Image 1 (cartoon, rainbow, N blue to C red):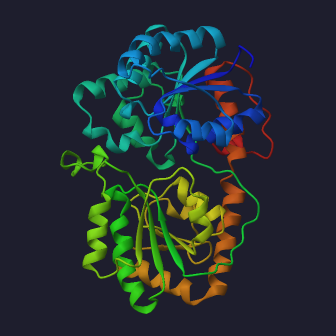
Image 2 (cartoon, rainbow, N blue to C red):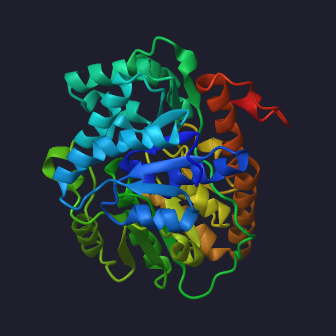
Length: 396
C-alpha cells in the first residue's frame, strides 16, 4: 500500500456497505481511501472483505481505555503516514464521545474536513442546545458537506445556519448494478420489508396489510428484516423521537393479535440482504420518507416491484403503475396493491423489470463516483474539475 491516499474516513457509520461502496467505487476514479473505524458488531470486517476497502480498526484490546489512550494518537499517526487530502466523517449528530473528540482534534489542527450527512436536519430539534451550537460551528468550519437528502436543502440551511450554501453538495444514494436478475419466483409468495424498524418507516403498516392479504392468499409470507437486538433506541426514552424503534416483541405481538403469526416472519438486521431479495416477490416500504432509501433501490435493481407510500419525492424513484405503486399510508391501500401483484404474474414481472431499468438508468453507483470525484476536486482540493461527459455533473 502506498503511503499516500486521498481520503481518511473516520467513524463507525462507515462500516455500512451503503456508505463504504462509495469509496470502493471511487477507486475507478483513482481516488484512494483508508477507513479508520470501530468493529462493534463485526460489520467492519465483513464490509472490508466484501468491498475490498482498506480498513484500520480502533484498538480495543483494553476496551475503552485503549481506544482513548491509543486510538487518538493512532488517528494522528494515520494522518501523518498517509497524508490524505482531507478527513471525512459521517453524521456527527450521532457520533459517540470518541469520534466527537476525534472530530474536535481535526478541527483544532485545521485539517480539511468533509462531512457526510444523511438527513441529520430531520432530527435536529432533538439535540441539546450545546450540541446544536457545536454542530453549527462544525458545519461552518467544514470544507464541504455532502448531503444525501435532496429535498431537505432549505431545512438544512435553516437549522444549521450555514453561512456559505455553496459548501453544501447534494448527492443521493445509488447502488451497484449487478447482473440481470431473474424475476421468476417459486415457492410460497414472499412480501419483503427490509429496513430498520424505526416507527416513522411504518413496519407496523406492513403487518396490518398482511392481515388483509392473508385472508385471500393464505400461503403468502411477510418477511420483516431489520430487528436490532437489544437496541437502546427501542427504549422508553426514545418513544417520542425520530430514533424510536419498534422492537421484535412489539411486532410479533401485533401479528399474534391479528392471527397471522405463522405468516409474518421477523429477522434481525443483516448486511447481506441478497438471500432475502432472491426470495422476494414484492418489496414494501410505506415510510414517512422514501427518498432515497438504499434498500428500496437495491430491491428495484434486483427486479422486485416496490409498493411505497405516496409521499414527497417518491415519484423520483417509483413511477406509479409502471415501476411500482405509490399508495396512501393505509393498510388497505398496501394490501390492495400486494394482492393485485400476487394475482397477476405478468404484471409483477413487467413491473419488476421496469423497476430495474429505472435504477440502471438513474441510480447507478458508478455515477456517484464521478459526481463525488468532481466535488472533491473543485470544492475541497482546489483542483480543476473533471470533464463532464453527458452532462451528469451539471445535474447536481
